[in-house]
Every structure is written in C-alpha cells, then in structure tokens.
Image (cartoon, rainbow, N blue to C red; front, side, top):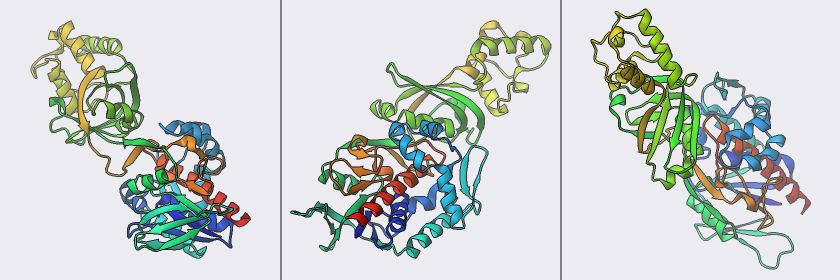
Length: 414
C-alpha cells in the first residue's frame, strides 16, 4: 500500500517513520516542497533544538496549548513527552532537561535530532523527495476505498492509498485541505515579542527580571495575565512571560492591531500597598541615604534608577525627604507600571501561528479527516499551537505518531 506524506517537517517525518514501522510492507513517501527536510528543527532553540518539555502529566501538559488543549488530552495519553524521550533514547540520542523544563539533546545541536530522524526513516525504507511542490490532491473516481491522486508541479502524479498533509502553516497546505472540503480557521501570529517605545526602557537592552506579572488590556472586557521572566530588548519587551502572553492573546491582539496597554508588576509577590509599606519601613531605617544609591527588592540597579526618576525622584533626594505622594508613585512604578504596546516583533527561534484546519473536522483518535476518509493531518497545519518551551514540537511528535500508526495499520488492512 502507498502512503504519501505531504511535508518534511517534524510531524511529517515522524508520521512517515511510524507508518513504516507499523506496516513494514507499506511504501511510504515524503514529499517536501523545499530543498531541506526538518528546517524548523534545525533553527529551533538557537540551533540546539528544544525537542520537548519534561511535563509528563497529560492533564498538566494540555494547559500549555492556547488552542487544541481539549483535543490533545486523548492523544497525549497515548504519546507524550516521556514517549518522545524514549523514542530518541532507543535510537541513541539522549535528551537533557534544563531548569525551566525545556529538553534538548545532550549535544546541544539540532543536527543530532535531524540525523537521528532521517537515519531512522531511511533505515525503514521511507522515500524522501525534495523539491516536490504539490499542485493538487484529489480522490480517484469510482474507487471502493479512498484512492488519492497527488498532482505534482511537473504535471506528474502519484497514486496513494493514504495521504497525510503536514506542511506546517504554508498557504499550499491550507489550499490542499480546503480543496478536499476542510475549513481553515484564519491564521494570526502567535509567539511574538511586544514593541514598546518608552523612556524607561531606553538603552536598557539586555536587562532581565527573574519573575514579573503581566496583565494585558486590549480594550475589551477580557484581560489576560502571565507570570514569568521578562527581558528588555532594543525594541521593547520579550522573555517567556511576554511570549506566553502573546500566545494566549494572539487573536485579541490581532483584533486590536497590536495596540494595547501592558501592566507590569516587577514584584509579583507584592501589591502596591505592601511595597509602599516596605518602602516606608526602609525610609525610617535609612533616612540619610540617597534613594537612587541602592536598588531594593532585587530590582536591577539601572531599572531602579529609571523607576525612581519616573516617580519624580531626583538623584540627590534622601529617604528622609521623600513625600508620601512620591513614595506611592514609586510603589506604583514597581508594582503597576503601565506600558503601551505599539506593535509586535518576532521570536527568532520559532514562528508559530494560531489557526489552521478546523479541529472539529479531525478524529483525534487517528488524526484522520472526518470529511475525507483516508486523509490525515498533523502538526502546525491544524488549529493547534503551544507556548514556548518545546510544546509545539511535542504536538508535532504526538499528532505525527498517531497519524502514522493509523495510516500504517489501515493501509495494511485495505
């Protein structure tokens, strides 16, 4: 039986491997439009490849997916990060966990992952064809089973018993899915940084905060919040907290054209009142010290100076001379600082979209289309996206594994 996988990314290659493992007599072909397989794997994690995340509880794992969390609950009970780790271990690649839970190959090289996947695929007889742009996928008329005709750019075609579309967020993939009756949820960017122009951030690029609490106000009733590390960049704000917020707020931010208010609490364990009281207490014990001379609450010194200046504190002001009004203003700068988001930047390690094939049209027990029998989907072409940290690759491994196994088994039964 002939299985054709459209797309040579992580979901497609993994599906091809699982299809070949499940049905050894199946002929499995991967068609990749570009001249490179696993391109996103190569650049992910700054070239180190953030393979997955060490969250081994499916109930907790799905909480990292703004879209697709309900649908992934079942698939993750069948193939989750522990299974990903096991797969690579069986093929000689050991993964390691970092303090934030991200998992990388111990070599810190994405080439290790690429070499492993391609080596396994080739050992199973998977045919890997580069530069193959698809023109169409159609169902052969008068066929008792779902026989597909995959039309190529050179006016040639391939007959297939099972077809999987796994070509990421490409317009080609969406076009092919639509041609076979599927609905595409409009795509918008996810996982991006915030463009912020503010005097408090000028020339502070590179300064980071271990943990802040962010609250995003896009002008509607719904407000989103996230807690985590924050990084100041030359164009605004980045870091895990911002990236998570961008993922959960992807559609809201798109609707407001990426114009929003961002409230930052640089001391998430405190509120304005408790910080005011702490500052008041410090004032009593250090009356003759200059306020700007020493930062409090582990705030980076350079940002402390910006916060005090914004609160109206001059360099020579002593703690003894600060008024209650100015003390309140400082407390607010530390716990409720407002920044105006004027646009979105990019996240250099990943480009992720929210949107894709409507999940209601997919049977997540097999990843088969509910509309077109014999057609399967996996990876980013689906309306699934995760936050940063290896979660998007994990959904690719999981959906690819389930689709590949199902195709391999059912093709063998046809």
